[in-house]
Length: 509
Image (cartoon, rainbow, N blue to C red; front, side, top):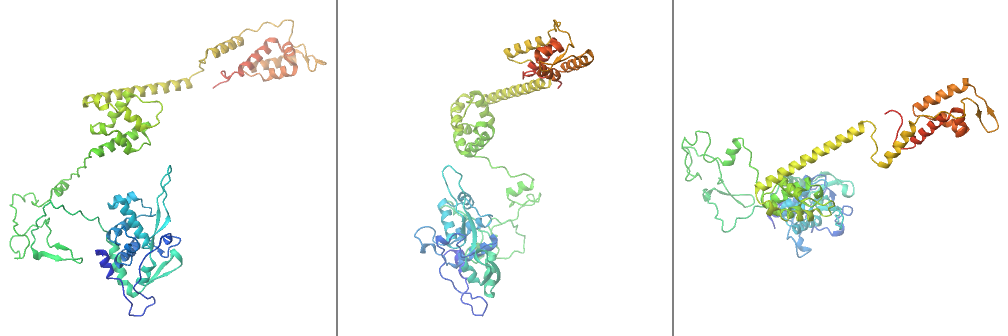
């Protein structure tokens, strides 16, 4: 049994002597089958927060009621500190949707170990499925979501009274005999377990402690702790020291060493921090430089966006190890050129970088390539500015001739026909009459016809042909030419023909 289990097993209450509302008793084996590991079928109640849930986790770890090897022959042997450490990571998640990779990174465990400890928490009644994650090929993986549960055995052992039904039960009281145990579990829930330190190898010499054997004290868990740590920064005082002092062989530093107020035992880190300097950033190793270069390229190169950073890091390993920067890689890609249609960015990048370190084998050559790339970028930028400026001037300026030769010829012919002088009417005098239906003819004098013709000519001057078109539609083209004049009618027909052409617009801007 582990240290955590042994410590909590001592606090499991036995049969109660005094009478109380709820009976506190020793419980049988704790195990939840797979069919009852869902929130809808769980017999426990849902924990309201991670702190109260960790109390039940420490109780299960110390009670020893759950033994994994009773139900299978593989996996962890007990509910120990590692399972408690995994539970601590789950307690801070809300909603509780832990990824296996996240727990591996936080706890330092393998994938199989994380899966085994999650299984232990479910079988102990501390976790229940809400949604079970799925992995479908071609689709995004869905994470599993858990509910933090408090087993019903925990409530019975501590005499906790609840109200409500199902997993939504709430705590309304606790028996007197369970108050001492719940206080101890609260202390444990507030304490965080850390990842155990690695044991020193056999070849590494053990540090020699200056403390005598009498300075070793026995702790609550039986671990030996020295009274004075080897890295103590205490300065022994001259005189007045007891004979049992553990500072054997120490001496007072000379005054010249203490003139600045610093002792010899002051660590270098403290000095650097007192001087106001920041901690130096940890330099990247070879793998880190590859991933850094790959991340910059996926952001700066358009046809590499969306590519896998680890794959790009594998492609650029040679130039990254040679000390290339992202600007130098972009300058090389500018020299090589790219395809118009890119199907697989990582494959194209691998082809383009095939001979990069051979051609640009010195920093001076790479610097020259970067300068040439910058000049090309500046030239392209100026060209884009000039093109936008020309398009804006063309849009804001006057009418521009069409670019097509055929359209230009049609426009020129229409303009020439429009500005051709009207010939004098032959044999037709203005104001001779209006023929409405071919049977009746109404003679119009100069008093009625002259204002009408003047209004038509004013409309034609502004490019409008409403009155003339109405007369042509009513009388016909020949009769309208006889009454109004052949030149007026021909001018109106020309304007209508030009208005139907989409290349010409009459009116003002």
